Length: 263
Picture 1 (cartoon, rainbow, N blue to C red):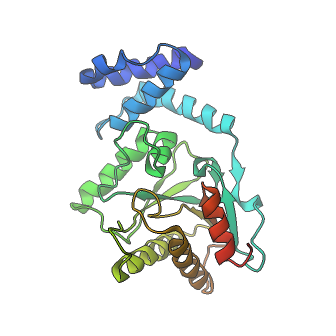
Picture 2: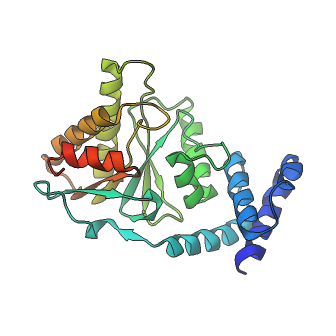
């Protein structure tokens, strides 16, 4: 099954689970683009609940084809930053990166973004990984029994991502001026992810720009904190041999290269 027919089947299965969205679905164009956007929207709003095997098989077929179509970027092949043999900077879509783990900046519920087709990295990662990711996060959070505090890290599988695992962390939300506690929590996000990756023997990982988007942490200061936390950690004996600072905007690439002394 390919293309529009496959997507329509997935939409039908999700709408059977969530009939309340039937009327909303009619607003989406019947072409491939419109139906694919409907699928992502339905996947985004679907709450954690048992997963349909028929849906998962078709979903995984679609997402793996889309992953390969976008092109997988091998993190191990990216050039190191001059003077930092274990660190690379790469601008692009983090869901294309092949590494042992990529880092997702989530919210305290740690279930992914429920806003249909939102532009945040949390939405992008969950949408590319598949519904299994939300379900695994739900199991973790139910066992924990409380919201995820800022500065910690959790590890899940990567499912349909090129990355084997996803490290989930909640960054600080900046309101007004950056406070000392905001800096401490952001540094803790990086240290917690690194430590958890090392505990699982992971060799390579990619960080997004934690807290600099929806959470309003200033780009320059966030990069300085990130680089210090990572370089300090890598001075110790660790399984981690490659850390990629993944950026999506030109300004962030400029900032990271400048902070690393390569700009």
